[in-house]
Length: 104
Image (cartoon, rainbow, N blue to C red; front, side, top):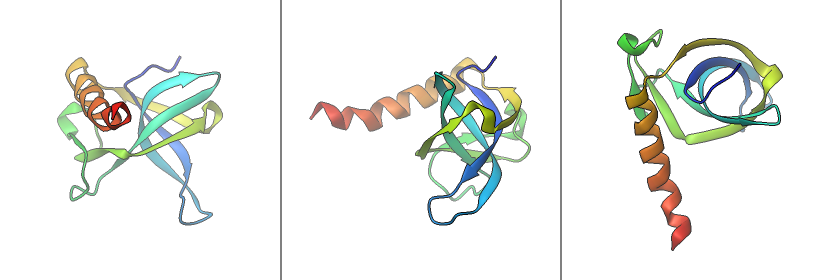
C-alpha cells in the first residue's frame, strides 16, 4: 500500500519530449489510483528540499516542489524508502508557502 512520504521509482514522461524514463519521486497523496508526486533529482544545483544518502537516497538529491505531477499507480515500479516525519513536514511547509498565493 502506498503512503504519503514514500520515495518511489516511476515511469515519467517529460513535458519537453515524448521520452519516458524511470525516475525517483516522492508521493504527496493518492486518490482513485492516481498518485500525485514531486520529482527528485540528483542535480544539487536545482532548487528544492535536500534529500541525503543518510536519509535513504541512492545519491544526495533534491525534492523538486516545482515539478509536481500525477501518475497512474500502475506506473510505479517500486517503493525505495519512506521519508521521516521531519522531512515530510518540510515538504508540507514549502508546499503551503507556494499555495498561499491562492489566498491573495
